[in-house]
Length: 321
Image 1 (spheres, rainbow, N blue to C red):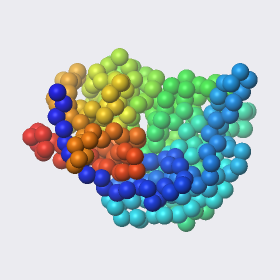
Image 2 (image 1 turned 30 degrees about the vertical axis):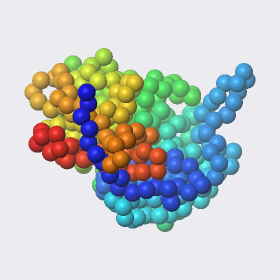
Image 3 (image 1 turned 90 degrees about the vertical axis):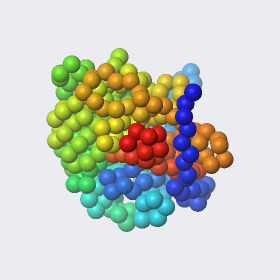
Image 4 (image 1 turned 90 degrees about the horizontal axis):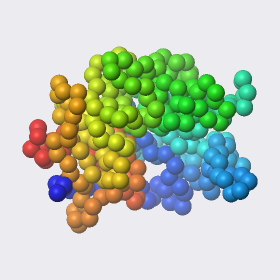
């Protein structure tokens, strides 16, 4: 039987979302939680012959967005983005700017493709656009503006005109102008990435990621070099946190809301040392719609409530610190 931890919400998002649609939820290196709310109707897919459905990068009408940043429960950013021509799925801060990201990109020709990194000033003015590839799973930036992108299978193996996919490596680092700084190359017994499930950019120096193979490895990069990896043997997790030689993973296939704590020791093959679930003060199980791991925390949205789960506090509560 799983143990349980009682968690209180950090903030309610109801007043920020209003009649709009929450389309992006991310955490920056500044520990600010960012939200993007579409203010008009969503136009994400089109239907083809026979009822087949296809993704749309560009809606029929440009979209207006509300972008909100919360530091704890304090509002530190609240702006409008007017007339953005791409559908948006991710957001991250850059030095003195914001980057909105469309997760998909079509390639129609040699110099005709969707530049899906959309960079804006902090007062909502469009600045520039960069290509960061199709099939983006997640995006996280560093304080100095390095952009880390991870990719799911279509972005790695190719779709939508990309015979030579930008994201073929599965994990890439860019500068803020779209120049590639690093791409993952497996070694030391690791396999190539076919689907990068979760990314955690802890700092300017340390980056962690977890991807789909038979062993589901967690890989630690330091200064863009592989320094450690562990086979988690836990498939389908969508977020994780790292702290003090431990890792906290959310969910697995068929059970998204069980949490697993691992001790990152010398052995490559790991087993969780404890499992638990989250409960509200009323005793209800907290079931999250979205989750993002950043450094030692996992941020969650359940309904209109924002939660923050700190691995440091989990270890203390479970007597593991």
